[in-house]
Image 1 (cartoon, each protein chain N blue to C red):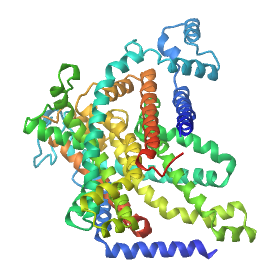
Image 2: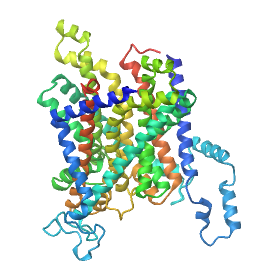
Image 3: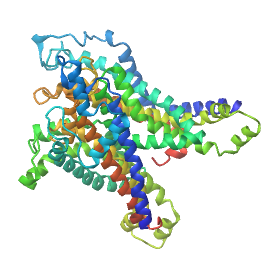
Image 4: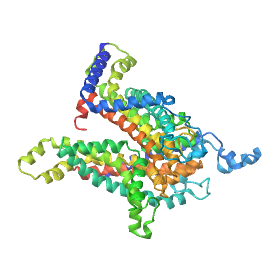
Length: 288
Length: 313
């Protein structure tokens, strides 16, 4: 009864203590907060409609009027990049969330119910044998890209990794003496799963979720870049880079700004993941 | 030993079968009737029905899967919807740039990443160690097209050392081929180097803390021999494993790198197929990439015994 709460408290306090001591985790957190603010307040940051065409001002270099220049349709790249942060954050967070939820459900089922285990894990083996980007490409190619289908496709491609992680935690925890004690005390299977095993998956899963978030942002940009992602009208960083594909030799700044934002964003999420891992599991992170 | 190799090889069959079912199933749940698409808007129901019969679409799903699998096993992936050419021919034409790109990336990555990882484990906590770790996190966060365009801009456009885009087939001379392949494989290597260097450092640190390393040092083994002869050899298994699983990243990255550098490889073929919704081609490419991924990891598994004689089956 008190175990999950206690576990959470120490986890939270350990994280806070770590953050106050270590700048490595403070830097990416700060950067991500800024990015989130940019995404939320995009309309108030001197942006214009990111889809607004302006044929008279095509392929302009950065200037006082167009901070990041304009693209081949005269759209303001600054506005597109700022609005693009919304897309990347939505995709990254949604995929991280849904892949974790599915991972918990599938992994717990598989670790607990022997009957499912063999079948589920064979399917996961098969899915993991298809490189995740290719799997996402195949799915999006079949059901035309939209924000939802891109999120679903990347989530499906990431599920095997999260469920395997949860399963491995479940398998190791269920051998612990306190689980035996819970069984003896008459706790039901679902109670053991929810109250005793699930809290143990939170720490490794939140680390994994951060990496999934970063991977999803890269996957979205790759999908959009090769034309299998979001419809071109949506200003995502991948789409802006895809637009620049034909013109980057004459107007490199068209590519520079979205690439810079994307890389910084993914970098912060990855750094946050490293920091989380070190804070939540000092043993595991000692050497990495 | 031979028995183990045989068993391990056989165990890839169910995995590949599941992959085949997944890929075939994906196509099956696709909205839209292929017969209707081929027949066009003007066709009468009778014509559509005839096309459906010709394509075998009226048969039950497991029969169709059986037919498809039988054809695939014989190397027949059907015909491209776009060009009408057999898919296997298209793949044969496009395979060289992709294989060149991947092999070059593999060679560059392993020969850069392993020494880097060893070095930073040896000089743990030093400036070099920090620099390598920063490179690893950075390299892991830069999407392939960002590094690709950065390299193409610097070495292609500004310095004009290497071609910005395009591919020269190896039959027309090794040097032009090499020049064309350097930038794309460098762009693709960065992620892979980060991955391998990181795991090399971690496993090396673990190995270096073992008793036998202390013993070797005590009896006066030189640093170089200690690092590469004693420690690296014992750290090899996790490193080789990551090289194998990292091939998945490599495959995804090659699709992007081929697009950035305009290489006419399998990745380009995939993108063209997606644009034209050319399902037989998409199926074939995904299947081939997955099969090669499974094959690489099978080889890695079998290599364990070479690197670690204690693992005997």
